[in-house]
Structure formats: structure tokens, C-alpha cells
Length: 148
Image 1 (cartoon, rainbow, N blue to C red):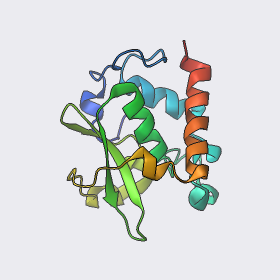
Image 2: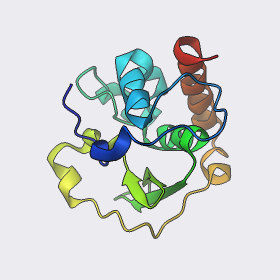
Image 3: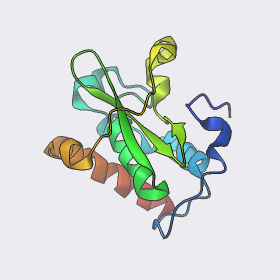
Image 4: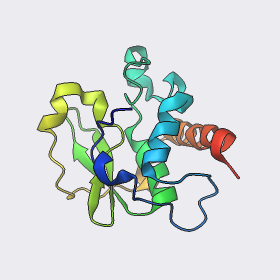
């Protein structure tokens, strides 16, 4: 499999921190599992759901994925302010940037500025009941295939 997400070159060396409750070897392993049927239309943000497809599995999955990555691997979640006022979320783990959902932007991904200046909080993101529900669904689906 060819990986195109930000940080893929070192993601195999990023190991779960503590007891995450999931059988995962690395951040690369998590990406593979999410790509293999866990990311789906139901986990995509509603405003983008009509455009979600198997060819663009990462569309609308950024914040729930970034907070799931934080749960398992630690680190911080940051955001890039997008037109319309929404943030695109990504992770920083041990000083390295990882964005498992960058592929949703296609060629526009080259224009994103990852400057680690906008920390994101799950309290703010999950104040939206719909988003919190999608996060819980993502965790539940992962637990079904990789839970202990």
C-alpha cells in the first residue's frame, strides 16, 4: 500500500502509549485499520456526507480521527483554520506532525500550513453532540476489529 498521509514515513515507529485497549502495533497500523472499512459515510461530518466515497474515505473525518489518535498515541491535536471558520485537525506526537486525513484535500493539501499554533480541545469539538456521536461510533467500530 502506498501511503500519502502527512508523517507516513515515521508513523510505523509511533507506538501506542500505555494501555489503549486496542490491538495496534503503530500509527501506520491504525491508518490501515481505519482505511479498511472503519471510515465510512456514517463517520463523515454531515455537511460533507453526500460527497463521501470509498475513493475519498478520509473526507470529513479529521477531528474525530485526530482525537482518537490522541487517545491511543498521546500527543496534541492542532487545527488549521479553513475558509468558512472550521478547523482541519491533525496530530503532533513527540514533536512530529501526523495528519491521517490530509488526502481528503487532494492537490490542495500542498497549500495547508501546519504551524502548530491552534491547539484544539475535545471539550469544544465534542460540545457538538453530533460530532461526539461520530467519535464514539469510530471508537466502537475500532473496538469491534481491534479491541482487547
